[in-house]
Image 1 (cartoon, rainbow, N blue to C red):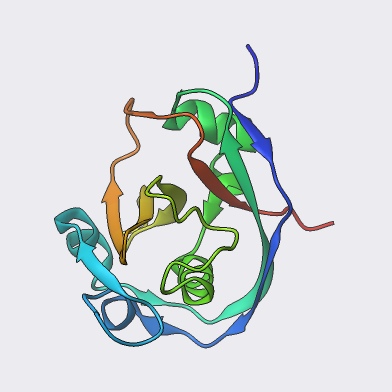
Image 2 (image 1 turned 45 degrees about the vertical axis):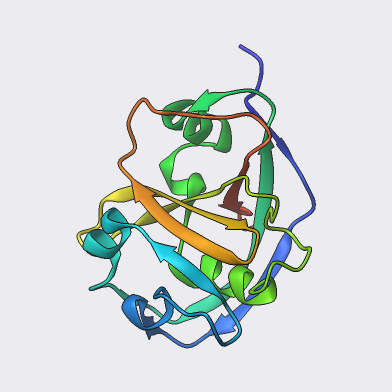
Length: 160
């Protein structure tokens, strides 16, 4: 089977203090990150999550070379442990592109996919996309739903 992803240059995420997910991932037309939509699944699974302090990391973006299912993407990234990221990492990247500026996240309406553990410890697919003037934040179960090619998936660079 050909690989479903190809890697791009990484982004460094600095040390960060912890935060309550609901305080950051909420509707906001002003401020550093303009969010116009937060999906029901994301609210149900992540609003109660206290995001731990983050010790810094390098996040590697991977562009899907073809349509792929979650299980194929996770396998190509090296399994759940290697594919998992945090809301702290996602939030930091969104702050760099809060109003649709160019950067590591796609801002062309295509989704950016992160695999994140929810408040109950269940790994979920969290996707964010910037369309016209604001971000949308969604979450879904990791099932056999397919993501379209040219979408971007993020995973933590393994420690050396």
